[in-house]
Image (cartoon, rainbow, N blue to C red; front, side, top):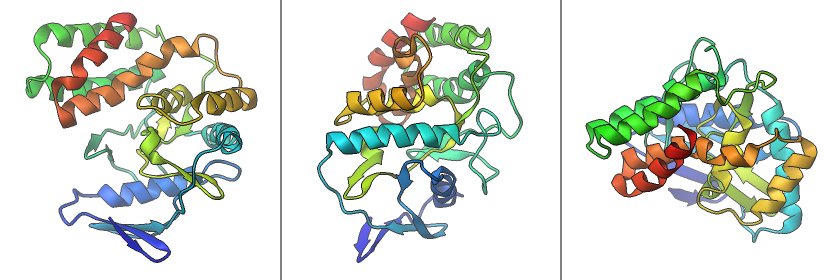
Length: 257
């Protein structure tokens, strides 16, 4: 990563195909009127992405309130279906340094999408790496079965336009408000972004959530589903960093299976 005047440049000479291109497409897709600002992409190539440089400031309550309201607007911009990639991109994406499957055609439900494109690919990888064993795999499979059976679907829900990797490190508090960076953008569930915000701690989190709920009242019991939405990022961490994340993921899986 390089700071060049008013540009912030990320370089990765060995970047896999589309690594920076899908990130740039995601940033553009998330830049909706009235939504959360993004780090504007300036140019992109197979091994390089430059964005507008952001001047970081300490988080404030007022900025948190504005972030919550604007995040609801971003989500409300919607998506054609669950798992759809950002406009301008028609392949799979990335979360961190590993692949992120996208759905080119609509799936039956959010539960089907989440089970088959957000949990099972990483369960297989974790099992193949011996990070989880067969018994643990079955615990997660019970969750996937319940998801496919519609246990966590809300028929009134429509796909949201989500960041997809909204941990605190991808939330930049700048002088003119929050900006988002490093998305794994796709059509998903709004609760996924909200759950991810708190996974590794976000300053002023409760103010963000309260302002969001005032702008877009969340469905009953959403806090009880936070752990379900955290299973995907935890499994990606198992695949990328090893078994230290397994106990937390297993504890959550037991709750929802």
